[in-house]
Image (cartoon, rainbow, N blue to C red):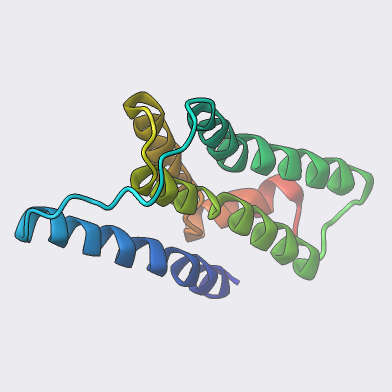
Length: 144
């Protein structure tokens, strides 16, 4: 199960890492700053940050709460149901790094760019499907 989740994690994160790597090489190696594709209104900066916060914190917390309520009704949770929950949790959190890339590319206020990138780093770090985290969740939800 952990291997399948790691494949999803890597597949969803690879384009972000590639994009950040290219932007870093262009900026450091060739002194070409990241292109600002478009200027957006000032109110777009907090909207992007709030969306990143929702995908990194609120949506996974909501999914976890709904799954916990479902698991509380049952004595044990099936492996298929637990895997589906972990996959949904991972996919919802892996939206945040793409919002971080959007914040870097769009011409936003620096505070919101920084905060959005921090949310993306949090999502990448916290939702890594390690054996330890998956086993902990299995014990909590009594998954088989």
